[in-house]
Image 1 (cartoon, one colour):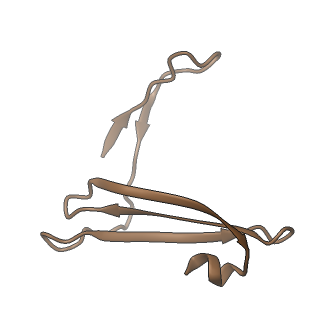
Image 2 (tube, helix red, strand yellow):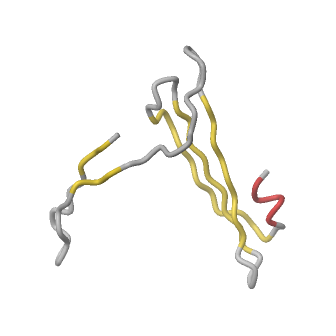
Length: 79
């Protein structure tokens, strides 16, 4: 899967093709959607973030999210 990106208006930026690799991600069954999510935590501050993406059975991006969380454990961030 390949897409293009544009950096018009960004000083010193160079336009180049954007390559997206799905890697070992497996498509959901026909008619289904798949949610992939993850979380992370900075060890020094304890501040955590989480995010995710929903894709359809063709691998098309449907919706995504990201959120900064309060101080919590890495396990809580991943949940």
